[in-house]
Structures are given as structure tokens and as C-alpha cells.
Length: 224
Image (cartoon, rainbow, N blue to C red):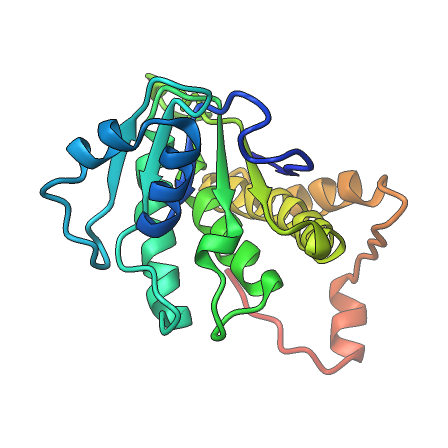
């Protein structure tokens, strides 16, 4: 998964899907001249947490994914649950990109960093797939990248959080891949080999400690 910032206006370019609140969805539809279409789709929608709804539109924004229960009092824990549910919906859609409208989700309980972290963590976890040792590979998800759209005045903060999101994605991918390797493959020597691969990155420093050094450090050795 790749995380990007949306430097353009939300309506300046075509988008397969925008994830936002009900309030902001109505605003977007109004700007696109599609209020009637949206209102028909949300007629029976209950705006509460867990009640998410994907509405297809005939405009630049092809889908609006309405996140139910968004409010100024939404706690971090509730936000986390909502993002997990939204991420699970997104990865099942036949789209390669989705945009999160951050302004719709930001409240006094969260910082911009926290908001982007919760979104990226949920999406990266939901989008993760591993089929190396499977006889039949699972169908690959279409979703390849997530864009974050926020106020222009917050661009620097959003870009900083976005870089963290991409680093988190890389770390999760490596950790999950290693965790899925069988124990007869993922032994200490294998871990050292993979760590040295990471060490080729100029921003990563890798050092190995043998059994003797570990004893010198007072580390208790476990026998496997």
C-alpha cells in the first residue's frame, strides 16, 4: 500500500472513492450537483458508528464511502473501530485508489498525526496478503494507494504523517512476512540474513550479537 497526499482540490480530479462523513458527503454531492442522487441513496441510512454506506455517483467522484457515527466527540477508540471497518470495505472494492477526507474526521480528540496513523494502520492490516506457501494464491486486492486530503494550511503536518504511514506500511509488511514463514525457515540465521538486507538501506543500521556476546550482556539464552 502506498500513502500519498492529495495536493489538489477534492473535486479537481476524478476519484474512484472518497471516504468521508455524512455531513461532508452531502456537501460534496451538492457541489457536484448530485444531491438528489445522494439523498435517494441515504434515505434509510442511520448515521451511527458501524453503519457505513458506499454510494455510487455519476460524477468525478465515482463512489462516496460514508463513515457512520462521525462526530466532534468521537473517541480515539471509536475512530479506530470505524477505520478498521472502513478499511475492510475498501480492500473488497474493485478500485485501485481511495481518498480520505481528513477534515471530515478530525475532531478535538485527535491530532492530524493520530488520524493518519489510525487510517494507515487499519488499511495496511486489511490489505495485507500472504500466499508464498499456499497451494492456491488468494485473489489480489485492487487497492494500491490511499490519498489524504486535508486543509492546505495543514499540508506540512499531513506530509509528515504520510511519511510515517509509508514507513509503517513497510515495517508491517516485513514483520508479517517473517511471522508467516514456517519455523524451519525463519530461524536465527534467516532473520540475520533478512536483517542484513535491511541494513543496505543507508538509514538503517544493523548489528548482530552472537551467543557469547549475549552472555556477556547478561542475556538469558533459551534453548529451542
